[in-house]
View (tube, rainbow, N blue to C red):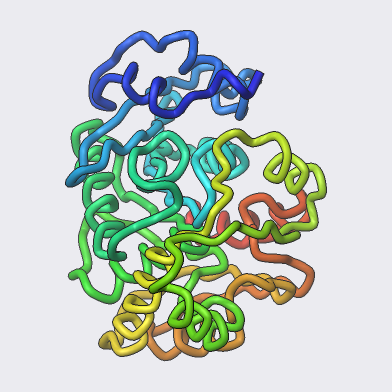
Length: 313
C-alpha cells in the first residue's frame, strides 16, 4: 500500500491548511497508513493542508479535541516527518491540547531538495510560518512547543534569538541537537569531500529500543530519505557557532535526554543548555536512545508523566 504515497502528487492536491476541504483518496490513504486518522478516537476534528514559506510548500496537519484549552506545536527531527509522530499527537490530545505539526522542507510531504536545507535560518522561517498558521486557525493559547532533535534545535534557536512571546507556553526539547556525536571528525570529513560530492548514502542507526519502529523506518516507510546531502552538513556547521555563542536566556525549557543516545553529543550539549538558560528542567533517561518520540512505551510514559506534571492546567 505504501507505494501509492507520492509526496509531490499528494501535496498538489491539498488546499491551504486554513481552508476546510475534502481530502483526496491519496490523502486519506496517507493518513491511514501512518495512523494519523486516529481511528480509535471520537470527536476529533482534523485538517491536512499546506502553506508557503519562501520557495517551499510546507504541508501541515492539525487536530482538535472537543474543547481544547491550549495547543501543542510539533517540529520533527532530521530524516523524520509527521507520519512518525502519532504517539506525541495522541499525548497532546490526551492533555486537552489542539495539536499542529508540519513537515520540514525536504522531508515528508513538503517540497524542497531531499533532506537538505540552504541555511538553518530557513527553519526559523518555517517556524514563524507555523505560528502564523496557528493564528489563522485560532488555536487556543498558550502554544506549547515540542521539538525532537533538529526540531529541538529549531526551537532552541528561537528561544535564544527571539524575544519572549505571550502566545507561547513551555518549550519541550527532546534529545535536542547542538553538536552531533563525533562532530569534529564529521566536520573534517565534510571539509574533505564537499568539493567533490553533493551527497553520500545514508546509514540507518538503531536509534530506538522499539524494534518494530526501526523495522518500519528502515524497510516500510516510503517517505524516508536515503541520502545525506553535504549542503545540510555545511548548514549545520555554520549554525553550531551561532548557538554556542548566543547570549544567555531567562527562559526555562523542559529537556528530555537519553543517556544511550548515540546520535547527538549530549555530554557536550547538556552543559551548553544549562549555561544558556536560567533554570532548565532536565530529565535524563539512562536507557533511552535518540529517537525519544518513538522509544519504547515504557520510556515514553516516563517522560510523558514528567511533562504532564509541568504542563497540566
